[in-house]
Image (cartoon, rainbow, N blue to C red):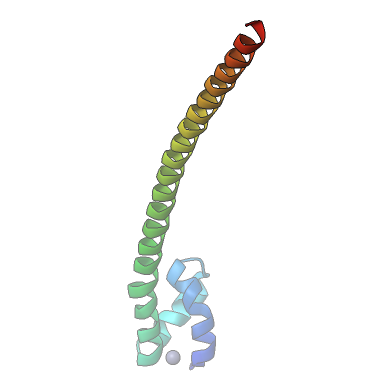
Length: 106
Ligand SMILES: [Zn+2]
């Protein structure tokens, strides 16, 4: 019994993830014994997909970590700047008020 490569290629992702039925699994394995093309396709899934996914996940995780680190640092800095700026403004305002009142009293 010969199944077309199209059907096998449809089944390969399911077979690769181990979610196809036993009957499909048997058909795929049978086909793979005499079809190099589909065998290569399955090997490509084995070799590339998990590695790429893992690498990409790792990169994304690192990028998010770095981003949140930077963001936290940036937020802390801008908070500090904001606090300093507010403090400075209040001091200047008080000083001006003090001068103004001093002039008026005298
Ligand atoms: Zn095939």
